[in-house]
Image (cartoon, rainbow, N blue to C red; front, top):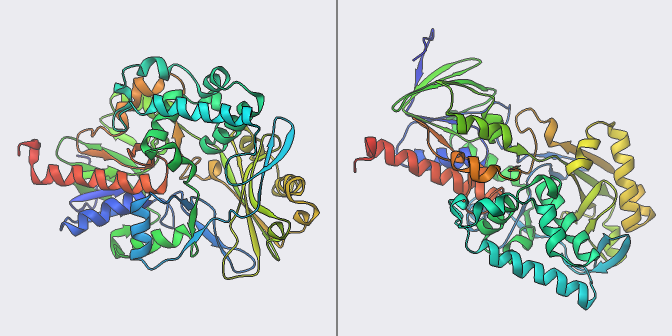
Length: 457
């Protein structure tokens, strides 16, 4: 291993203090393993982060919502004494699709029987396709190469038959993927939906949120680790063999038996590995790219859209805002709208000023909710692509043909290196729930190796 002036030792190093890394650390500590978590930022949480706005309301700038079947998140929320809030669904939902404005309820627009039949036939078709996919190894799917070769945009074009239906699925996927559907493999999308269990679970993934913020949950969990979490400690190199790792940060040199790298694959690719990663893993970090997204939080003196009979839920085909949701605190008078800008629109947003972004978002909200939308108390946005230690959101996706070629490298251990993070999840991939599941899996791998060297057990 490389020489250092001072070497610090522990049993397991974890790189990254998001839900995946903190979960892995807590599981290992419970088993009596000595752990150190190295985090590049001056905070924990990764792509989960909140701040207090000008009105004193805690608002999530990153991951926020949970679905009813996300059992790990619900268990932790209850364990830490936090409060769940149901996403407001009463009233009309806005759907600006195929150059028409329609009002529905919930996540599905008020389509004519023809259009509605088209939406449901597509749901049934993809449900039949993904039910045969192994959530642990989608590349082993019988027709994996064929499915992986097609992108999501072409699949929509060939399998949705009405213009309204095509518009609905394009906008639904652009918001969910933070990429254009043409940029993402069909197999990648089907795999994600399979890890959710059902399409119903996918549609229900934004049913609730945490009043105190999702960030407050990760802060509470990380506090249990105390001095084991070292902030402002970006990992620059990992020297490894089958039994040991030597890790260098800007300040320290650590030696351990194992390391769990729990950061996005693209970010993990910026670490220097000695010896270099195998070619397939190296290529993975180059082709597996983060999506682009701005999360915009707009606060008003009251949730005026409710008074007008709107739920705040909306999907918009044209204009930078792709989706809106009501995130008004249940114990305050103020109203809070969330506006999501993703894909190519988010890339454009990154090139203009904050005032220009605000003007553009408010213009979209005015079209949806009326002139009152132009008079917010405050406006905040977060560009996750500009975040040095995230490089995008909500997660990374494969282009056509890349998942079958490089997917197995996502979480195959290499020497003493193990991998975690929501991109590696096999349940609720790319959600907070998935990040937690991936941390549990990686910790279990490490415990097995430490208990059974060479896997001879």
